[in-house]
Amino acid sequence: MKATQKDFAAVAPRAAREARVFFLCGQDEAGIQDGAARIVGLLDDPGERIELAGADLRRDPVRLGDEARSTSLFGGARHIVVRVSGDEAAEAVANLLDGHGEACPVILLAANATDKSKTAKLLGDRSDALVVTFWPPDLKSVAGAVRTMADAAGVRIDGAMAERIARAAGLDTRIARSEIAKLALYLDAGPESPKSADAAAFEAIGASTEEDGFMPLVNAVLGGEAGRIPGELRRMRELGLNPVAVVLALERRAAQLAALAAKLGPRGDVRQVIEAEKAARRIFWKDERDLTQQLKRWRGRRLERLVARTAMLHRQLLANSQSAELFLAQGLAEIGRVAAAKG
Image (cartoon, rainbow, N blue to C red; front, side, top):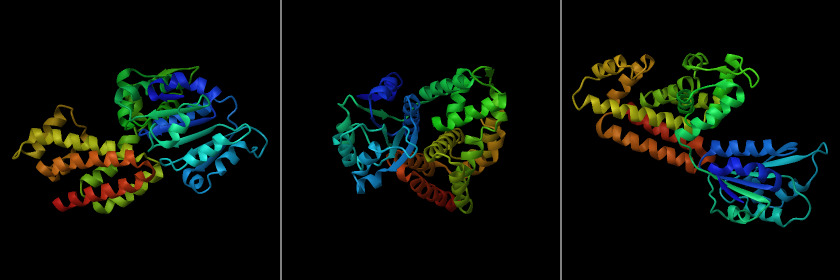
C-alpha cells in the first residue's frame, strides 16, 4: 500500500490491521514521527517498544527479522521502531519479508528517503506493508492539525489562534502539541470539560517555543554576538528544540529585516523606521532593540545574501535530518561571523 499525508488519516486504520511493515519517509520529520505515533496508537496491542538504528541493521541485516519474530521479555506483544538514513535498512527489510513465521509490526522512520527508494519499492506493492511520504507542511495544514489536537485536549480555539500556535511552533506539530498540552493544563481543560483559549491564555503560558526558545539564539546570531552562540546552541539541545524550527524562525526574522530595509531605503533613519513600525503595532516592543541592532548590520547585498543563506540552510536540514544539529551549528556560526564583522 502507498499513501501521502493527505490520505494517511483515512488509510492508517486499515493499514494498522493488515500491514506489518510501515515505511514512513519524506522531508517532514515531525509528520513522520506523528505518523508513527498514529500507527502505534491504532495497533490492537502495541506491547513493548523496541528501538533499533538503521546503521546497526546495515551491519547485521539478519537482526531485524530475528527481533521481529522473537518473544518479548515478558511474553507479551511488541513493536519495533527503526530510524534509518536512506536505504541502509533495505537488505534487513528484504530478509524480514523473506522470513517465515509471524512477525511483530515494524515501523521504519526515514526522514531523508522518498517513495522511490529501494526500501519503498520493496514494500509499495505489498498488501502487508504501507509506504507513506510526508512532505513539509504549509501553514493551513498545520493550523488544521493544531485545531484537531486542541479538540482532543478539550481546548477550544478559533482559526486565528490555531495559525498563531502553528507559526510559533515553526510549523512543527510536535512543538505545537506541547503548546496545546500547556494550554490544557493552564486552563484546566479536558475532553469532558472543554475550555476556550484566547491570545491572553497563550501569552500566559509563555509562548516559550518561539519567544523564549528560538529568538535568543536568532538574536545572538544576527546580532553578531559570537560569544553567545555556543551557549544558545547548548540550550537549544537541552530544550529539545527542532533545528528546522530554529531555521524557520531565522528565516522569518530575515524576511522581517528585508521588509524593514525596503521601507528604510539607502539613507533612511533606522530608529525612525522602527519607531513608526512600533507605533503601527507591526513590531512588538520586546523586539525593538534587537531589530534596531540587526537592521544596522544587515543592509543591501549583505541582507540579500542572508535571506538566500537561510533558505539554503533550511534545505540542508531537510535533506540531512540525521545531521541537522551539526549543519545548523555550522550555518549559524558562519552567519554570526558575518554579522560580527559588520560591528
